[in-house]
Length: 90
Length: 404
Image 1 (tube, helix red, strand yellow):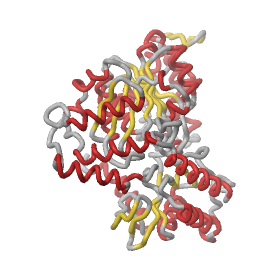
Image 2 (cartoon, chains in turn brown, yellow; image 1 turned 90 degrees about the vertical axis):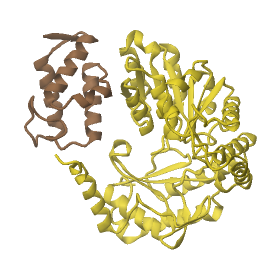
Image 3 (spheres, helix red, strand yellow; image 1 turned 180 degrees about the horizontal axis):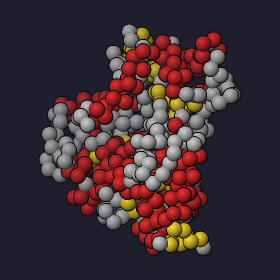
Image 4 (cartoon, one colour; image 1 turned 180 degrees about the vertical axis):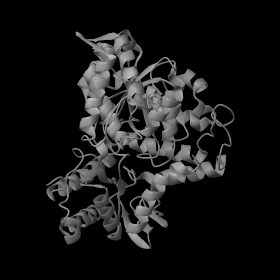
């Protein structure tokens, strides 16, 4: 599965890797992050940190993630799949 | 998981406040004495956290108008605007608000919160896109949620970020509703409205400006940031409240769009609640007439907030924004803000304590709101309390502000 953002092709593994890298920076490497990591429960981030993280991710992939889909996003995998969908639709 | 398990975090946070010996979110004003004074903990206290920008809550004409309405129209309407709750004066107030803004019509809601809830949930549908400044008030987020609309946030006051997100929408941008506020309630900063209007003119969309904290404060006639920035004609909807500058309770939306009237039929927060009481409508009409009649209250307010802002800034405090009636003192952390608030109240000055996650970027704030009714002596006393805390040993040790 490949998707285009601007002139760059991104696929699921790449999206996943970038999310994990961004989260690792945010949590300063304290927690091991993978597909099943729970964004709120496992990372001990407050809602503001999550919001700012989303803004970073949106810029990285040149998409806007509707706030209304966030209740459906629990894990890193959920987020990666949503981003893949939005990137493909853009 | 039990029904009340989710309250554990809140219970812990409240326990922390009890240990410090304060209850900043449950303050009882034992007796209200004037727009700017009350009795708290048995002590005469200057009120500097009330949003009573023009100080009209005890205005003799507003009080007299409310009393007359109470005598002639009773204590309440007991019904919805859609049923038996629209009296002649509700409609008169709507026409007066529309005339004040030079727009076609207005809708009066029962609270300011419901004005946003009612307009947004009535206007937007599940297939609509709404673009919110990230720091928009909870009532705006809640209205969009009730509508089930697609909500996209742009970085606070960042016009480039707004434009980028509008461009990403392609054709959908033309029907997107952009929502911003005149003055943001936490830090007191203004929207870059002229630049936002340029984006709208270039890329399309509709614009809603919430003037809750700027009505009666900004603009030559007090119509808010839309007037100050000279973009009244570009605002498709202006929302405001009666509970700040107008000293009552209730809210409104004005618009030049003929479809506004139809929103009455689709807005559940308009339909399924009782309309404002006759006394509230009467005092609000009187207050609006005063606000529209002259500049002296705005000039007095402006002199007061500029003075307090300059004095706090001169003491080295980090302030949230350039001068406005909302002056936010940025503190290092939550604990410092709690202690700071406690000491101000002990010195007879009531202000608002604002803590994350309710604040932008997780900052801890002491928020003052200045009134036209504050006397020179009261501004001096507020200022003196801040100066004392600046030099007080226990608090100075924490190095107030961000190293300033």
